Amino acid sequence: MSNNVPTIADLLSFFPEVTLPFTITEESMDHFRLTNEDLPFALINAFLEEWEGVDEDDMTEYFPCLKLPSEEQYECILYWRAAFLKYEYILTTINKSGDVISRRVIAGSRYEGSHFLKSAARVDEDRIIHIMTGIMSADQNELDPELSKPYNMEIMPSGEIISYKE
Image 1 (cartoon, rainbow, N blue to C red):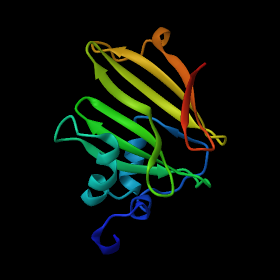
Image 2 (image 1 turned 30 degrees about the vertical axis):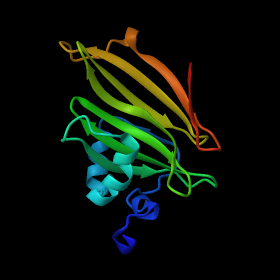
Image 3 (image 1 turned 120 degrees about the vertical axis):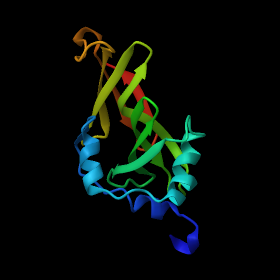
Image 4 (image 1 turned 90 degrees about the vertical axis):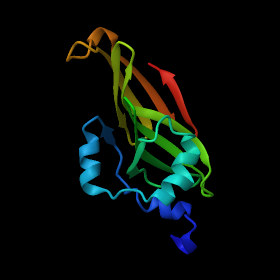
């Protein structure tokens, strides 16, 4: 980190660039843990905690996953955020100054009262994000296919991430 003041370039250096398309599931974190380095606390404090706001608990963890190929107006990174009963893959677009343009949860799992909500995502070559979300009751081990829902998001040339239902 240059002069001990974290820069956006320092943060981006922890996110390996991937080739599109790619898929994110619950198991993807196993791969990221083997191939990526932990983010230093200085970068978490300077950027991710600024973007995310105050943690719900003192145990929230962040981990760098990947970076999409650079675009003229923005960079796009995916990081994992683990909090109490909530594990999320968050896709974030940032301008060249390091300001957030848009951020969306695209995959993960969380507990909501009597059920688990689980989702997986595929980002294609056109930066369209295909998401499948399913619900599993807390007393079952399988997702209910009747409650599964697909939806899409798209990363626009401006870096805005828009959402639309199929």
